Image (cartoon, rainbow, N blue to C red; front, side):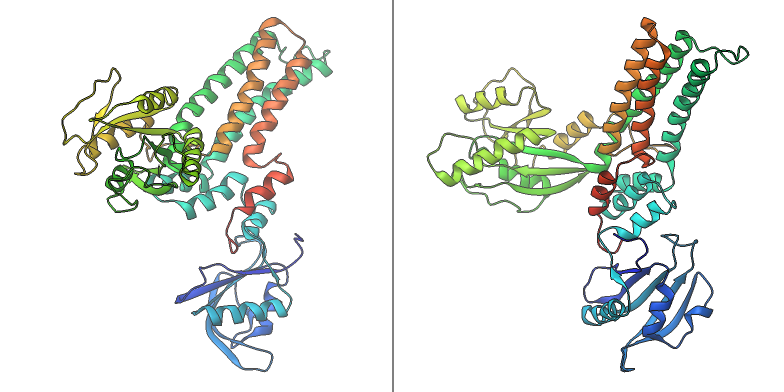
Length: 449
């Protein structure tokens, strides 16, 4: 990727619609756009304005009547000259305009390159860049609210405060190590290191505790519906989604592959996966389905283990044992039939066929995963799995520094752990993020963003 290139891309979904938008960014954006636009002198147009114009090809033939927006550097999304061409929404005409721009000097933007330029040019930090994609992918009011907090810089401010505390401690340590003759400088002792690192550890622990709940609001819960054949797994999926997503028959082994669907319960997205029934089978296709069921179980954050209240066998016992260390809810299905089994573990009565007991099941899921409601007054809310992992990594370094301070090791050894914590937190905002990480993050963006 060459930042000196002027890039362009279609920023809207390429389909028949009222309008499509083509975005251009770079030092030559105005010059290149001027080559294909008539009816307005872009070099004379003020910044942050919209003009009526036409797009013409090399032969002077009108391609489209457009509105063209101009944002002069540095007051633009990328801090470069940015132009947005609003075409009529046909995919053919939009593609023709894009082809003209490419022939006249633009390069097709890479995935996420506009936002990447905004980051590299210092307009936003990495947490704000990630929040752009979070906003695009938001499926609930809660996830949208979290994305807005990230875009507002709440996460950056929180991380900057933590890094500033470590930076102040490192500064005092450096002065004491390098300039012992400055007797009027605060003399760093192990006690001060212990007090400061303990305070930081306590604060980060609270942030992580809250972040786990916020992550669920943002990313949802990977939920696997598990059970032997013909216990009502597919019926439960259909009942929870309130649609006929999975095929339901009275024959065991109907579900040969995973069937998936998303469910919004009180602002939380449940990523539901109906799996093939677990049993011993010689059918090679069914065996593959069962293997995928076990694979999905290992990835699951929640297991809905479905048992048949009229029939309990060795397979059920194995499934109870297999899921004992997972977050699980045991569902005794077919509540409309007489119960013929006894369980010594908590369970919920459900009739998937009659859609009875679904609300208590949803309430139980919320009770298990939501420890704290999202408040509009929350500041600096962490909700990204990447951010949580880096916070935990920085916590390890701070705990190491604390142990060293308590045992009286040399300050320069404590300094190493503190610098590790400081740099790890910097990876969250992108201040010390490696190029590989940055490239990987922006590859997940859509082409015109």
